[in-house]
Image 1: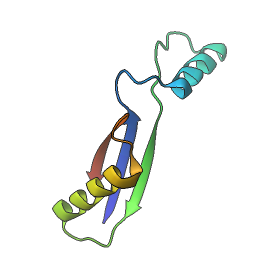
Image 2 (image 1 turned 120 degrees about the vertical axis):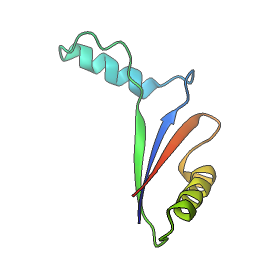
Image 3 (image 1 turned 60 degrees about the vertical axis):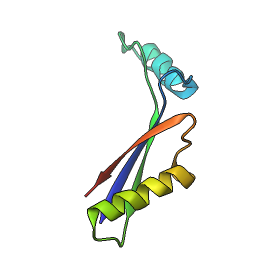
Image 4 (image 1 turned 30 degrees about the vertical axis):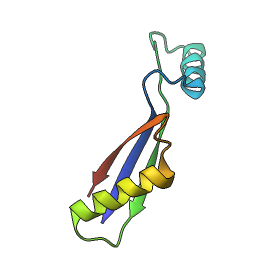
Length: 79
């Protein structure tokens, strides 16, 4: 079973990498980009076969290691 975790900074948390990307896009001629939020995608291969159990396991992984719940939010996709 595969799982994807999308991690991004919570609203209100400064995103210096996103701001650097926005600035670089402007210097490359891409006008009109008013904001960029940068995040990460983590893909996992799981031995688990039950989707609900897999999601619960991945949620525990996120809380323990994959995301910082103080400043980041995450979403999980199970396939």
